[in-house]
Image (cartoon, rainbow, N blue to C red; front, side, top):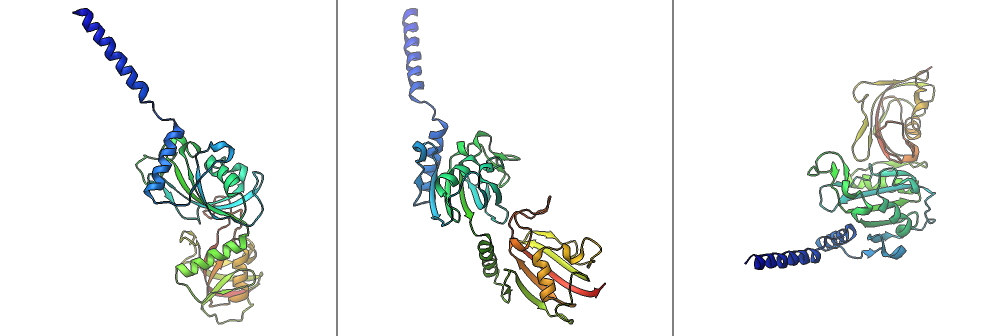
Length: 316
């Protein structure tokens, strides 16, 4: 009887062992591949191509929206990028391209906190300046098992969970002034704004309230008293310290008007006078460009909006 029981246990153990061998856990690449296929199906995505460059090893899928017409990108190129991203589980989405700006060498992209897959996709798949694409990045080329961000994985928009594949939209800017002008025109349309005039430099301005003085009286050596605000085009205000309390721009203090960014200086000197209320929309080249002030909330190559109300103008 004991021998029969022992024999039965051996057979049962062998059967369990065989079952375990038949249910091998998928590798991370296999898991990511299934994630992406499920995501494509669930979101009815069409036109995506699997990346097969280098022997079909990345597991990424992509769709070229605009092939671009600029030069081919190299890892040694300093690139201006705008992008959006979201995790497949829907718990992380960053869709504001005003904030999602990158300006550095393509070879530094992963060092600056963006996924290796994004760097590879731009170099191998997008290829050209002025181009844009959608890219599905498997988790092993994104933020891996540890994810990204802080807080609980259940938080929305503060953390990307581990083993999450990502969808990116990315555009490599070739002509920065043209791109900025498009951003400003889209902003005007989206907010139903009218009455702005574009200058030869690319500045947009609108006189809200005409002044009582003579245009041209505001100069480098003028003492100008004004209330003002400065904001990104997504509505984030980066300077409202003088929204209600007038600030005095004095040439002997912080260079006065000479210390202002080009677009503001042009707008005030060429189109404002005492009593003027003026709205200014600046392309990034007339603002802080690709190198904003250290510690500033202004991202690289960000178009800006300023509102000025001039109360006094006197000369030294």
